[in-house]
Length: 201
Length: 201
Image (cartoon, rainbow over all chains, first blue to last red; front, top):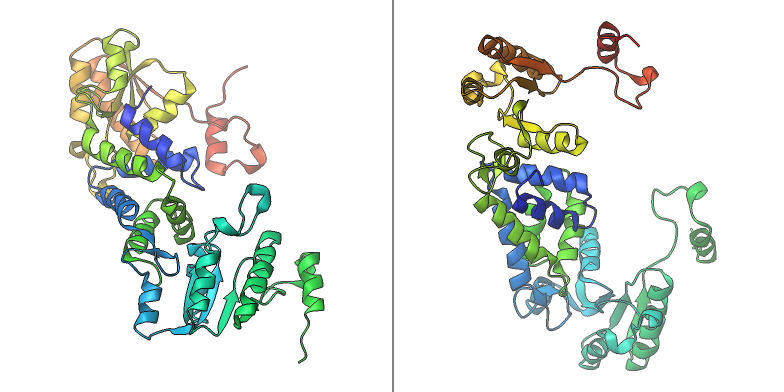
């Protein structure tokens, strides 16, 4: 008990953040304590704002502050292609895909991947909502961008099985060696898929 | 602009924390967004609490929530030795020393070290307040625990020069090889001081 209680509380709360250990928590606490530093109050405000204002987009289940998320609003304005929908597990996957600037369609967030062992079955995910969007018409392709893990692959297969009868093209992200990767260090599974899925030059 | 504004704001604020890069800020943001996670609001509350409640101890200038810091309160109750005062540059140095459980006296926080180039002269630090504490009596030893840097050493010399005429013992933390350190990797300055300050076995 050498520090005031509120300082110890803050260190405990900071150490709960992912990737922050007790040493970083201590360093951040002392940075925050600096009298002239008003940044911490802005951070506190930003935290309260996301917990108060952010909910799910009623169409694609991305994070949103209005009824629709910023991407669905762009689709609505005709600034993005409404006829192709990229299906992702979590909203953070959208951020990764948007950074590529390769995809200009709409999204659909499942809220996870199928994982029966942990009780995640199709009804736990936004799959019925995806099927309803496709049934409503105007969508020609669904790009399933779940991760190439066992659960992600199973989810993609399940979606393909459900979507194909609706007359929509179902595609999947390519699998292979990462660009800039070294064959020497590639894992055997990826390398064997890269050979299996080799393309003509 | 793929994410709602308040999510981007939070990432910007988190990336201002020391040791937190944009990637960690993103990871923490998504952790905070989890609907069921109430920890972020507790963190926001803890930040607001330190900015509202924490000020400087009126006696030793450590962080305090009451008039006196927890350590000065212990001194007041007779639970610590009031006759030896450890002088540190910053409140966080107290935490480091308390962890050793080696020191059971009082503290005095200077609020920095002498650094004339950056305009930190004796009047910028709590030196007059330290001299007043010693003049008030009851202190037999002042242990100067500033870091063994140029500025820390200069501050220690200045304090010794001011304190010795007041009839108090002035001591300094030992300099030498760190325990568990390897001579092979010791820096030349530390090693030469360790030779100079060698002790008899």
